[in-house]
Amino acid sequence: MSKENSSKSCDGAGGRLTYKDAGVDIDAGSELIRRIAKMAPGIGGLFPLGMLFAGFFLLHFLLSFSHTGDSYLVAGTDGGGTKLKLAFETGIHETIGIDLVAMSVNDIVTSGAKPLFFLDYYATSRLDVDLAEKVIKGIVGGCQQSDCTLLGGEVVFFFLYILLVNVYHSVHRVVLDLKVDVVITIAFIFAMTRLLQPCYPVWWQLPMMVLQDLVLNYHSMGNRPTQCMMWSNLLTLKVAVVFYSSLSTLDHDFTKTDNSLLTTMVLLNSFQTEEMPNFYAEGEYDLSGFAVGIVKKDSVIDGKNIVAGDVLIGLPSSGVHSNGFSLVRRVLARSGLSLNELPGGSVSLGEALMAPTVIYVKQVLDLIIKGGVKGIAHITGGGFTDNISGVFPKGLGASIYKESWEVPSLFKWIQEAGRIEDVEMSRTFNMGIGMVLVVTEEASRKILEEGQHKAYRIGEVVCGEGVRYC
Image (cartoon, rainbow, N blue to C red; front, top):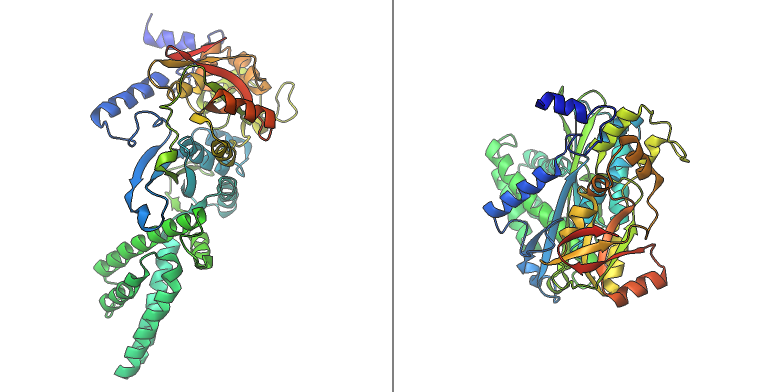
């Protein structure tokens, strides 16, 4: 049979759909990861386990800010994915920003890291302010849920700095007396230093930095090398502001200063927007972002202490979350249903599919503090099968109790409408469980008995690699 005929038969009305049929090859993705790992063994960080979701960076200089010891910066990144297509079709844009934040912060919390800040990127052919406002509200909401600072484009901050320097030069041009000019210069440097001091850890460098900009800009603000120099200083200042503020939220002993200025800067600097005419269809946009968190060196959750007999605790999802939408859209096309209907559902199909991803940060960090958490898996692309497997040390796997939680009706509809095999469903979707924690037996009892967080005992760690369902 030819490839063309084979493709047609797989996609026919009677064929069984797979994620690969919808254009996403999980095996190819896994193979690429393996090849990259061979090319650059150190990529992603310092741990052989726990690197499935986020990368690590050793923060040696944290000692200069704190007595707590070495820590790691943990980074994660993601995009809007094909769920954006449904946002365009349904007109539901208020929650897609939550999905964007969730996919990154949920990844980095699997290592035990507390998210510090999130950086977003919004691209469109023509900026629709009302539409962009809906999207950014979701991003802001996601950052609030994960208790992290929203950062963004450098444009506003850059022009603010340029404006301040321009003010100085405007005054300088009308002052002819040298003594007065010197006084004004000193006053300006002092004012800028005092203004930025609460946000800049090495504040004693500020006078020289400001003076450097003033001197090099003495004749012309349009000089290109000068602007590049100020840009460099600006980025240095910006990173320092962000990092110093983030540390101050972790431990009040780091700083006693008022961060109101920092808050203003972050709000001004909260959204990076890119207009690319004719690149996207009218009314469409693309999203991406990344989160950076921090975790103490001795508090990293990396799965290396997992043993057979440990318990798998599942935290419920809100629905499909943000993965598997290529297959979802193929199922929609096959079913012939509109997004305004969902058989047996209390909401429309579009609303059910667009339900925002649960942000598990506060819940997971709270469970980590209580102790007994050895490994964490964020159930994203690859479903249970691929994501849980990546948490265990060599030689261990998982036994999942299929009847231990109620699979949401949305997944049942997707499976029936697409005639999708059980194995394929488990490799593609979260099936109602968005985060899995590997914990001790004692910790599992506490989690389930206290009932502070909705959770299920969904399985256990067993000898032998792989994930099996029973």
